[in-house]
Length: 337
Image (tube, rainbow, N blue to C red):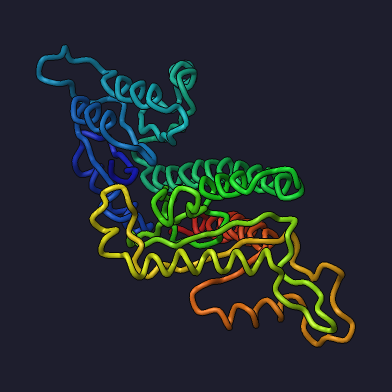
């Protein structure tokens, strides 16, 4: 299905064209604007398309097989309300001073009424209500994402969970990786045998995949070795595991391509998630110039195809993603013209 459209339901072609041009001047491209001049065309379009907003004249000409009346537009309005009562609707009518008529229509769904001659106010209002609705939808989406972050934080604090709980959750909520490239996750059972299944395979918009290996949050990345910090055996094993998976991908790419159930694993990147905190197990070392982040960055620079991160990093990435949509996207919606 195509992108949501702004529907202009008006039988006077000059008025419909004027409204269309005014919306284009406000930044709405012609591709998302649709004009219908009669009830039949409007009903067919509503049934088969997503709607961003609607400008509607209630006095429309009937179809050829219908009896003429002055309320053809109401059929279109009720079809819109039945499909989704929250779709922004601005009604163009000469009966804006008829409170009883307006009240009866509004019982079926929220509407805004304007005189047909006031085209500037009509266009400004549909833009305003579309923005309000888009921000409302965005707020609901972000609230669900915040709930997911809190759920994941509780899981990270629970040492009794198996690794698969974390990998299954992240595969479902891959947006928490903070990468806008990913469009979904893939299952892959064949990699190195049944007992050596890749934890997560995330696919980008080009169809290429990355390998994610998740270990337990209670296991640390570094451990004290004299006056220095070295990679723990748990982290080292995870890195080796990821490298083994990547090596298999490089060697067996063409053979794997012939398997219809296998994703496209051509030169994938590897990611290892381990450890709860973005800090050394015993706090920052007194005698070392390296902070935890310095030490981790140095380690990652020495690894060519694998990147190590903590569960704390994932939480931070998820919060940054939410903040971007909460601030930047809302600003773009409000300043869209």
